[in-house]
Image 1: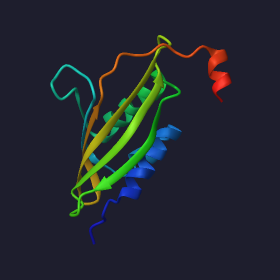
Image 2: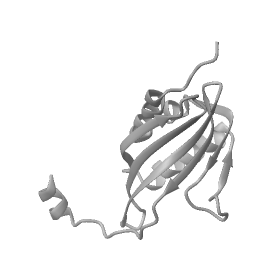
Image 3: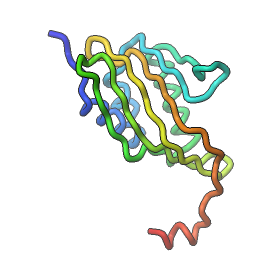
Image 4: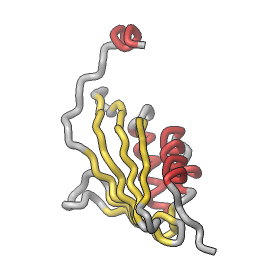
Length: 140
């Protein structure tokens, strides 16, 4: 019996991204999956191939931006289950102290209940100044 990937599975993947839980993130990725990054040297960004390389790339984002979150995420599947979409807002403090806050989507190709391709696409916006600590405390 072929497993079907659901929108709830994609939600669980993004919940794991936000916990910085690499095992939880990689649960639904195929061993031979491909990840196309949001930026890189090519029109498609960069191509990261294979489960281990993708896990290292995701962990690298958490290391560079320890507060990174994919907020307000929503997930959709095609009727035949071969495609998925996740929509999110990426929020993180960059190593230089500026903030990245942009909306984006991941386009997934699914085969046999596993993610075989993740194509990340996001809005392009310059980093914004970090809120002063006092202003951030007042906002909470």
